[in-house]
Amino acid sequence: MNAVYLGLGSNLQNPLAQLRAAVRSLDSLPDTELVAVSGVWRSAAIGPGEQPDYLNAVARLSTGLTPHQLLDRLQDIENSQGRERAVRWGARTLDLDILLYGTMQLHDERLVIPHPRMRQRDFVLQPLFEVATGTLMLPDGAELGTLVAACPPGELTRTDLLLVP
Figure 1 (spheres, rainbow, N blue to C red):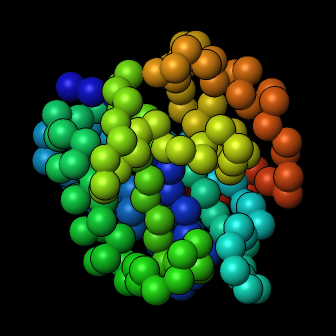
Figure 2 (figure 1 turned 180 degrees about the vertical axis):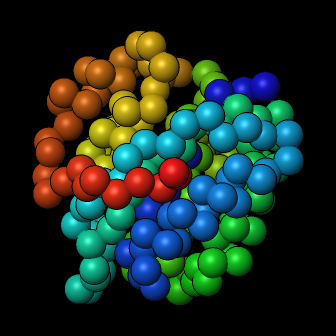
Figure 3 (figure 1 turned 90 degrees about the horizontal axis):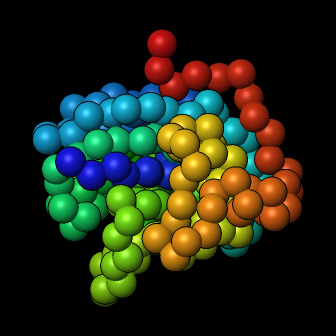
């Protein structure tokens, strides 16, 4: 089994309900255990045009799925929740990203692990820090706590919302 961290985000069609539905779907993935889910963080949208704020979280899984099998399942979940891929970085019902997959580094036409922009995104680093175990080191040797301390806070706010009871 591999320790995997996923970023979750939504800014359309009741984002809190979208994230809660995604967590339920993650909890039912085959050969996978949902280990932990961060709190919910609100952030300003990054992308074109005027968009509503995002709700973000990170889930920690233990999975026997390969990275590409997991990616396929995540895209199935996104599609089942109305995800449309018309505009890059546009508003979306659900965005599920593989942030880290054990100590693996992968770069192919479908998938890049670790997620290439996670180091600059406070809405990824802060919730990741909540669910990380021990001193989490990225595959390149960077320590998560150091990245969190160096990342500008932007307009990120931790809410009191929960994704799991």
